[in-house]
Amino acid sequence: MEIRIDNQSFEKIKLVLIEQFKEKHPTTKFNHKIYRFLIKKLRRQLYRQQIAKERDEKLRLEEIDRQNDPLYQAWIIQKENIRIQKEIEEEEEENKRARKLREQREQMEIQKKEQLRKEMEEKQKELSLSKITAPTHNPFAPIQVTITPSIERPVCSFYLKTGVCRYNERCRRTHNKPDITNTLLAVNMYSNFEMQYGLDDEYDCDIGLEFEESERYENFKDFYYDVLPEFERFGRVIMFKVCSNSEIQLRGNVYVQYETDYQAMKAYKALNTRYYAGRMVQCQFVNIPSWSAAICGLSERGKCPKGRRCNYLHVFRNPPLKSIETNKEKSSRKHKRSKSYDRSNKKKKKKSHH
Ligand SMILES: [Zn+2]
Ligand SMILES: [Zn+2]
Image (cartoon, rainbow, N blue to C red; front, top):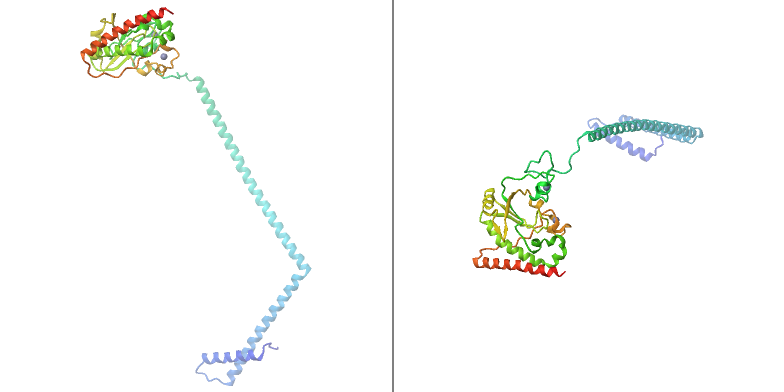
């Protein structure tokens, strides 16, 4: 067997081997016998390497031949096709399983929904049933708080809110008359030209124009500054309202609310049946649960469609409180007030021209 290696390389390897041996066995004397042994060993080594190399090369060439063989090619393709087919089948199987699972889940969802819907329907049914059978509720909260309503007749809301009712004792609804309260009502105590002659009923608008607003208010101011101190003699007045309504039950009504029932009672005793401006003052105790409920909310904005014929309080705007007044001023105002009544008479003559 020929070793295919050039001499130069062989000599190089041979020298390396000798050097290696000498390093490994420094005590052994290197001789020709050892040299031949090393050469033989190297030759065998190189021979084995060469055989291995040649075998590998042969196998490589055979592999190339095999791959180039159409039969082999066909076999490879078939194998690949089978693999692909298998993959496809596996994929289909997987898809089938997934679809089945999905369908099962969907079915369950539908069942759940159906169950929920049925439950809802039943609840709805129960609700609607209870709606039918339950007693109907009054949508409005009871206004009445302080006075217990009559069992037989409903409470008169006008009386309840304003302390008066146009029907008085003839009212078909209940008027719960309070005993003693902190609020006095001086019935029809205030009067002016229109009220005095009852002209505001018929000629509400016309007379309103003729009897100037400012003049009417001046008239009220005189009354206010004259009367309020009278009431204040008996206690602190926390609410003083004078009606401008033309309705008979409210016309010229003066509401005076004290801090206590006792103060109101003292005022009642002192002022009831006394005379003011030539007319007898008639006082009564009233219960006004809420002033905002008693006073016409629309009137305050001047938008009440009923005008002064409204059944709720249309009140004069109270003028600012006067501080300390001298008697002289008081007497002069009293004089002025009487003058204003004279003026009212003049106006009446003027009116007769129409
Ligand atoms: Zn009534
Ligand atoms: Zn009104």
